[in-house]
Length: 354
Image (cartoon, rainbow, N blue to C red; front, side, top):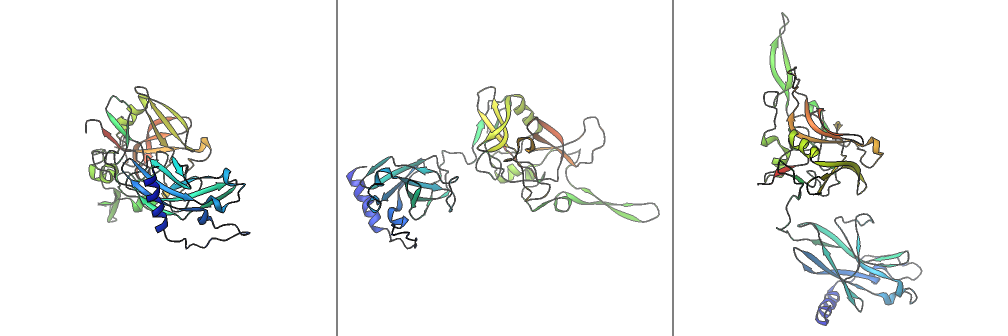
């Protein structure tokens, strides 16, 4: 950093209010926020964010100063934990002032940051502060991967409602565009009274069933496609054929990604990859747990297609089942045997010519 920048940063810290949070003093040790002073954002651009910090190593025992490691912690959450707040060390420093540069942050998101000083097992933290990143028009609103597939399909890198490839995201009954607390006949949008029929000499009875989407109209309309409604911009729930081409033109392996079980698909054409977490499905209740962190043999993945299952042999259909992608540790296939009532995640697709 130049002398001019250091002077400017020093003035910023002079203007910072004194720490008001009362940290306990143990055995006469300095307060944590006297050692690690709150940082200051000095540059916020679409490509990177610069945050300065200041440390008061003079408050530490002279024998420990040379072992101190310091920098900035940053997190999408206001509570800092080891797994969600990586520590960044300075790219430049001088006389207790230092600069950390952050790249590849999510656009238009609120982050929290704080300074830290670590000496052995002891960690001192400055007061946390918020940071909102700028919107970056160069980063797609919903990132996707081009696997070089023959049908030109581009696959989203995350499920609807997720921000990372390994997150479950939201769960949808087939033909619905919102999550809910229960997944059953009584809460399903397209099940209800259909007609009344005369039953012999005993009068009339009400017939209930599926009120929309049958073997005569087996494909979701845009207004009932969760991807089209929630994401727009050409996104759709995949067709049965798009899943079949995806499986045919990729090598797939059931494995862990960032600690989550799922299927990793690698393009045979360009070696790009797509990960689908084993998000299971919601049957009856929304807070039903899944096993994507558990035993490999217990993990299962289900993903919506836009097509109702209609038997190809012409046998009668009760309109209750839809095609979906199903995978576990031993198989990965398009399955016709899943109910439309259950909650499943959606991995949207779009076409390369849009």
